[in-house]
Amino acid sequence: DEVMCVRCGLCYNVCPQSFSFKDEINYLKSRKHDLRYSKYLGYYKNIYSARTQIQKFWDYIQDGGIVSTLIYYMLKNQLVDAVITIKHSKNFWKPEIEIVQDFKKIKQVGGTIYSNAPLLSVLNETKKFKNIAIIALPCKINALQKGSLFPVSLPIFDNIKYKIGLFCWESLSYESMIQFIEKNFDVQIDEIIKMNIKKGKFIIDLESGDVLAIPLKEWYKYAYNFCNYCDD
Image 1 (tube, one colour):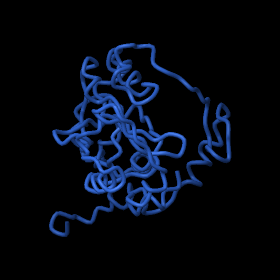
Image 2 (cartoon, one colour):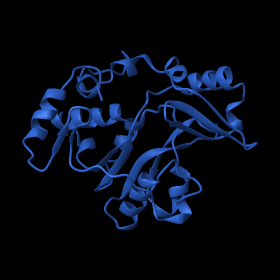
Image 3 (cartoon, helix red, strand yellow):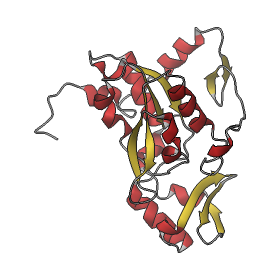
Image 4 (cartoon, one colour):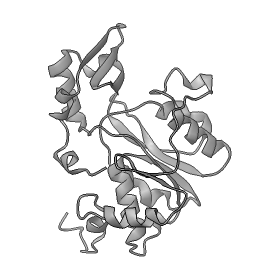
């Protein structure tokens, strides 16, 4: 927006695609002696496969329910005051940004939505909280890391206590998602109760009880172009 822009450089500094700082991040992580390294995963502390033990989550979680459980735990134990994440909007499968403050409202943000949303646009709203957590795709996490490493004297990054990154197989706009579903499955998007990606396939569960799947390569044709340049 040329009218609103004040040429501060913030958007360039935090944009995941503006410049790469992977070497700098890897150097900083290499100095931490409690981290391990894999050429496929990068630096990590430990790797676990897990499933939530909170049975009431099982009806609406995506797979293991670990992210839902982490949100629940952080809010219930007052580790954070709010969590920035995504929920279904009135148009089912269209993402809507949600700032969750009550651990009893986890159900509304359970599961995965494969369309993208400008998650970081609400950071200005959450600066009133002392501590927050954010659940985000790698591109958003990279933007947050840039905001922390290249500070521009803005308070919006200061209260982010936890950043939980999600696995990503490229992302679509809501409009592209509708096109993808209608062309490849010949169903309407509001007939779908669950979407998933497993073992190289994109899978949908329908209200009728039917489960349909196609090779994941069809999904990539509808993804954002900038996903092709992601180095995560």
